[in-house]
Image (cartoon, each protein chain N blue to C red):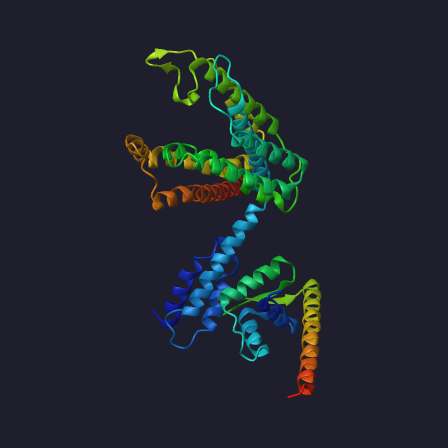
Amino acid sequence: MREPTFLVLTALAAGPQHGYAVIEDVRRITDGRVTLRAGTLYAVLDRLRGDGLIEVEREEVVQSRLRRYYQLTALGERRLADESARLRQQAAVADGRLRDRRTRLGNAPA
Amino acid sequence: MTEQHELEGRYRRLMTAYPWRHRREYEEEMIGVLLAAAEPGQRRPRVRDRADLLVNALAVRLGGWVSDLGDEAWRRAASAVQLVGALFLLLVGLRRLLPVPGLTFHGEFEAMDFARPAVWAIVLTLALAGLRRVATGVAAAGAVVEIVHVAGWYDYSPTQVLQSGWLVTVALLVAVASAWLAGGERVAGRRGLWWFGAALLVAIGGSVVDSSQIGFHDGFQYAVTMDGRFVFRFAVPLYLIAAALAVWGWWRQGGPVRRRILALTAPVAGVAAMVAYGFAGFMYSSQRFPSPVLLEPVQWAILVATPVVTFALAAILLNRWERLSALVELARQAERRG
């Protein structure tokens, strides 16, 4: 799963959100490191809808413009949980190896 | 006009890069998001937004084409092109080895003369046996064999190379169709392919009859007159029967597959037409010099681009035609209901 996809699913895990709110949320989640642009965001949303990982929760018209709220489906929730577990497991391996390395280097003769 | 209207107009123009389906579904939402993210007083889209929209529009279009090309009708058409193309190349290769009644062949057969039919016989067998990946590898090797065979003439007769361009295109087409079918669902229930097989056999029979009647000429160089005299060519009825069988086999594929077969074979016609009309002057002048004029890099580029461009145009035309037909059908249904 690519990072923008993971981040959009993570944003929607908090609850239904419309497009601009997802962009803002992703910026918050990543401490400003990732700013999704409209083209990328809607490419991801379209793919996730096609794969059945998200769905439209409701539509409303704000200042004569359509606004759709998207939410995770049960499948989307499972896929995000799997991806999150995979990343956690890989991060744990990386942490473990870094710890070992520091121990090794710390014990090495100067 | 306010700044926001101006900015919105520019974003809408950028949105035209997206396919219609995507625009209908998301354009209003995307414009809303783009305007919400704009700075106060901003009149023009930012470079990064512009690039993001254009890149993603292209990706959506490519994704649409790729998923369209994965549909069953395309795969059936690719399967027909793979099998009939391989059989055609096999028979063309065998034709060279066939003895012609009344004529003695004084040349010697080379390894290449046996390699050509052998490789296409293997491709055909593997494709029919369902060994799709191996068939792809052998078909690629077959295309290389055909290219090497034709390339051997280049130094002394580039005209002959050009005239064989369509045959090399058929070989490449079989290789591409094989690669296309290597993954995904198997194509089941092939229809009407025996008719194509029968058509090819009858056409080869016609070619043998032609050779024994009017010599080792390409049968198509003479219609029904030779040196101003009427000649009844015994092969003509055979060619007509072959054409009728091929059209019948093609017709039996059903509308969507039929149209896709035409789109897939368009590159062969495109290359033949390009050589006949685009390179007519080159072929005329190349033959008049004692040492033949060779092709320039730009001419090679045109030759290589022709099949790709022809297929792209044929696929776009097909897409437009089918979309238009669907709209007409919807309108008819609405009329009947009304």
